[in-house]
Length: 332
Ligand code: AHM
Ligand code: MG
Image (cartoon, rainbow, N blue to C red; front, side):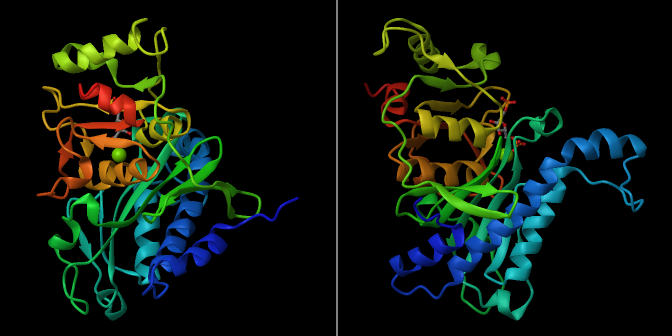
């Protein structure tokens, strides 16, 4: 049997790819792994908490109030980042404003992290896959001071690492540091991630499309024409593509990354700027998609080129296999 590679071994072995690496980024990735194991454990107990403990007045055995899982996840990640001391600040989809950490160690740290602690929250209560998405940047403010908004509002091209954790039939951590994409599966019995998906590549083309078709009447003519193409016998496979929409972006993206497909959440009248957040959802997944050979746009611009102007900015989102995104953009 060939030797298994743990996430920690893998991170350490890749540290030399960064000529001036001090180990800070490696430690930050380990902090993420740790927090994700805590959240994974909580996610696995979610049904118990909601339907058994929840039935007892929302209190656990110690008589403490149960919190919602997205808040639990948010706190677990923030705690890991605060204790780890590798970031000077964080921004989370769950919080209105960013947090600048006060400690001297944090103020001397070089990185900020932006994340969606539990994406697909409408799926929590119905036992369907959910995930965490994260994006890491080097700060632009001077070291030794508090993190600023400018540290958070950097275009996606400046990401030094990004990834997601999918709490699915197993827990999987996928990340990139700009040198390809690798995936690690958690062995829950020993609490260790092992390299399970080395050097992930998105198929150049696919036959899965993921979109909330309930919004069809609000889609622009170009998108409707693209969906009609997907559903027709006229596409390159000669038979209709399959529609697959979980409603958890991480899970929809992950499936399309492996099998080939496109995920679309366009701008619509009810969400004129789109639904998904540029900083917490679109940039990190766009970085991974491009690293795996795919594409991500807002309909006009490459996602990674967009200069953010606010923390919770939303954008239209087309992400997936290269030829499918190009076709949807009307480039073929
Ligand atoms: P969330 O971060 O509040 O969970 O919202 C993002 C989610 C995505 O995971 C998912 O793809 C999308 O919203 C689903 O939206 P809709 O229910 O409008 O199809
Ligand atoms: Mg989300």
